[in-house]
Length: 415
Image 1 (tube, helix red, strand yellow):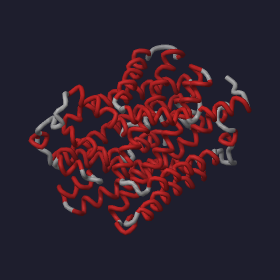
Image 2 (cartoon, rainbow, N blue to C red):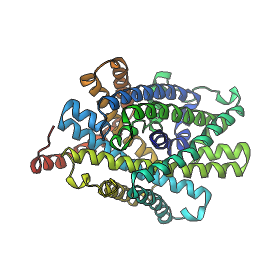
Image 3 (spheres, one colour):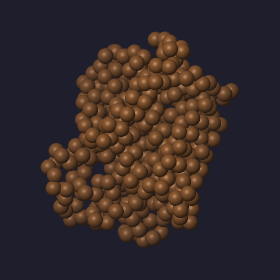
Image 4 (cartoon, rainbow, N blue to C red):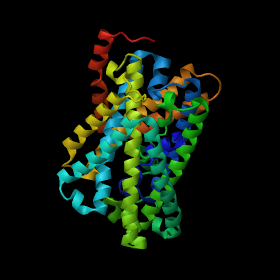
């Protein structure tokens, strides 16, 4: 279940939309993929060590708090929490887009599309309210349904792609270092979630053994499947068509094997995004649970029902995502994703960098070189987000300061 949580959270909407975003760079986007996957594996190895050293609920937040104190811990918890529920909103909208490719009438108007997105979001919310075990079982089933077809698509599709399809190698006109910097932040969106098995550590059996295996294996499988699929799509669909496509993978399948294949890929995208929503709803509640348990989030987030589920945290996270869906339902899917991709990825890279720094400060034993490289990679990827995304990230981070001040005044946090 832990491995399925990692894979299911990573393989969400990014793999189905990224080929369109990467189209201007052509095959040279593989540079970004190579750096992103290498950096993701460095981060996964670092999180594996952190999970063994501090096997506690909270993931990045818990590690940073133990290494740097309450203030840094709150900043990371807040940043991570915001990135999760905002990402949930984007993925829910992507689910509606995938469903619309199968049943156009369901998303014929913005209101219908929003209702489809909210139906998926709240279905996953109710599953999580029923309990972590039920959510975990659903995650295993959904991960199996999307990982195997995605791997199969990537492997089979590459047989149909000749080397001439990747000429010119770099149509963007930028230098290769510029291409790498621009594409790493985009490709990293598809690899976010590598750390999620560390977040519900308190609910995982034998976390010191299970979490490192789940983190490394899940990252590798999800990364390879995503790279294969995106590379195949870039080779199958002309660049000018790809740039404007709202469903690039379905477009590639339909062009290669006919309309039926396009419908099948659209169905796969719907399953994939639904599974990602389910995983992130679970993680969102666990982050707020850990922060509330340490006195940094309101106490209500720490309440659990008789099954041990932090129901309040589940409902609040989904409610905030619902507000975002309603507020942005009139925007196009591509516009929404371009905005959310940079904001959400930037917000997650900050906890990644801080977690790597936490191991460098308080970790014991080896792994310092790996953690140092993971830290450098996180900062490098963050530099590619651009001023607008970094500015929005700073605003969202500062929005949490009144909450932190109120919590410090009402119930001083303990170390």
